[in-house]
Structures are given as structure tokens and as C-alpha cells.
Image (cartoon, rainbow, N blue to C red; front, side, top):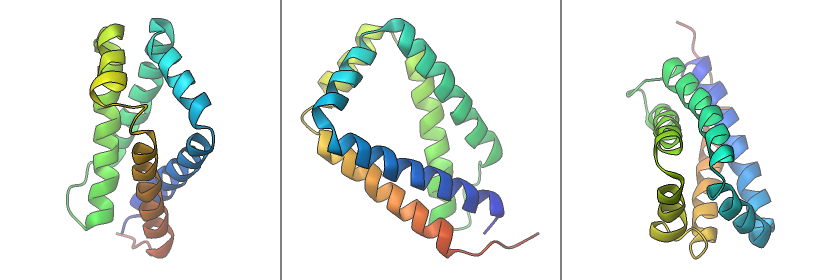
Length: 136
């Protein structure tokens, strides 16, 4: 496995674990912050720009679709991050809020989304630390 895959797996995995645990221990505050954020076009622009940089960096550095599940999951996370950033940048704010709060039922399914992030983080972190790099 490439050193880049292992680094991104550890980075994304630890990020997902820490953010998921933080959000799940402070559910009400998190829901209020996300709701307020989605209704603030200026903040959504900033989130979109920052997320765009992260998504582009991941896709440009790691666009590998073969080599095992860990490699593909890291690539998928990069693409999902990039696509999400484009939605933040190009969708009208009311449509973004409707998507997250309405159609995706963010508040009702909060713990499910948190659990998905936590499981993804555990998988990526474990895979990143367990695997050994091979040099080309």
C-alpha cells in the first residue's frame, strides 16, 4: 500500500472519529450550529471554499480505483468531499438547507449519520495503522 494512501487513511480516519465523537456528545448544540450554518449564505460560501480545497487535494493526490478496499474508500471520500463542496458553492442556500434538514432528515437521523462517520473513521484508522507501506 502506498505511503500516501496510509497517510490519508490515518488522517481522514482520525478526523472522522474525533468529529463524530464530539458531535455525538453534544447533539443539541451540533444540530443548532448546523441549522444556523445552513441558513447563513456567507458561512456556507466559506465552508464550500475550504471543503473544495480539501476535496481537490484528496482527488488530485489520490484518485486510485484499484488496490483493495482501503484504497478505494480513501478515493471515494475524496470524491464525495469534492462533490459536497460543489453543492455548497452552487446550490442556493434554501436548497442546501432543504436537502440537509428536510430530505436527509439530519436532526432525526443525527445518531445514524454520526455512527456512519464513526465506523468509517475506525475502519480507515485501523487500516491505515495496520497496513505497511510498500515503496515503488
